[in-house]
Picture (cartoon, rainbow, N blue to C red):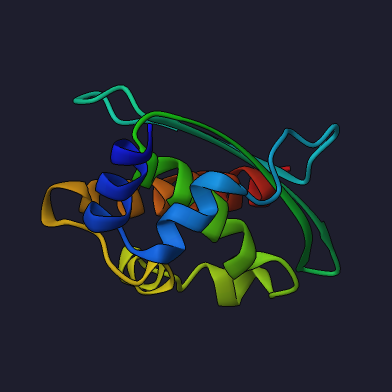
Length: 130
């Protein structure tokens, strides 16, 4: 078991390892202001993001993520990036912001940050339709 933890630390940043060990804001909000549910069809990783807003400010966000470790970490860190910020502000976030918050993603895992942004955009679009 210790070998796999060492391998994870070597492959991924300490921030990714921390978000895997202690994912933030896990779950699903009842009666959300917006809901984004996206799946990467190539690897079947999935992120469900629900948000609640008050006066265009995201007050709460919850995620359910399934897939590889960087997908779970990207979903977790995304919630930290968006809670307390305006809808217009978070609409400008990119996968590069998620990558930066995670400190480092291996090149073959950059799609995980993109999936998190896709979930965010889907939740924003849903909130604007409501």
